[in-house]
Length: 559
Image (cartoon, rainbow, N blue to C red):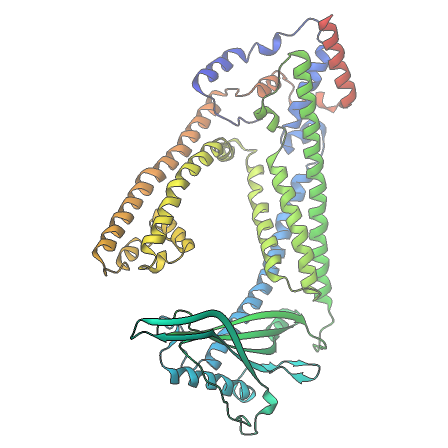
């Protein structure tokens, strides 16, 4: 069993002096066979899979299963990742297509977004969108089509939101406004257009820009993602609910125009792919079923190991209380709860849920791509992190695990203290610099910007983009940025690294001197039986027999 925590100076010397004789001070009435049996069972419990194989000849099924899971889950994630990438790319490319089709004069990566400043531009853009929608079939190079419900086309809706009543006179600095918002809409059906692609009746609508809040244009288009055929997957049918927004909430003289879409993915009603037999689909379903079976088996084995550890912890605690009238420390109790097994259990649960969603996506019963990718991605990350457990069986690799485990409590306490200072800078930067700097515009942007500064990223650009409109704000921004960078890079980050380094040196010192750092380890160290000795081949005593022996011995000691 490996050392897990560093000791303080005084307690360390005391334990080193007492660990050799502590367990030999037993009462004369103690049954030595019970004690040796418990030591042997504890030592076997904390052995690695190779040592357990030498001790009892039991094959390391969990180890082999985890290695198999790594290959299966990684292959499954790669397969689903390619499919998910095609889906996301298809949605993004269609959104870009809508912007080029329906926004007049749109350019990619346009600085400041698409903004209109004159009334005529607003009317021209609305008419332009309607005209492009009517002539969509003659314009687009894609497989876009109008939506039909019960055999009828769904209309394009033009809705304007405005204040109910207002009288605004900036010249006299007077205004009257009713803040209640009203909505007015009218519909345009594609079938109402003439053969030459114009409306049968001219549009008759007007906008009161002093009361206007926004103009929203809604329409629905449908298409099919055919690129999945090349990857032996059935194409999905997409429904794009497009909304084009003319935002005038600020009333600042510029109306921002944006395009958004809400995508619904459905199974196509009738499909036929020539030359396909569906064999690849069955193989993928079979592969996902194998992954679920492997994860379920791993889940059962790990749950059983955790339960056995809890039972053995209960036995050791009862033994300690019966023979030595002591309470086992919480750190020793937690040694019986293997955190790696908890991680594997959680990973298996996520993999089973994600594989189930993946089967539903492949069979076209559901389209939860985002949920499935999160579940499978997190599960795969945990599976690969779990490999560190098996590297920990080697002494030179194990020091990383011991350092992380020993430093974790101090790191959490240190981060809590540092977080108070960090949040203070975040709120200050958001309130003071937000109106003047894009990177401080919202609170989440502030946290990301300051975290980047801690890591030394984009420092000069952050200083450079601060406008010098007001001397007070400019001077405050310099003091704010210089103090934050100096405090967190030169002090907080250095202390954080020193905390990890100190723990590493302590663990390394303990490994070199082989100091026993817990009562549990000192008790197990009294067992001198090697895994190859054959002493571990005997059957373990039942829990009830062991407890009965403990309490009987306890009663004899009291008499």
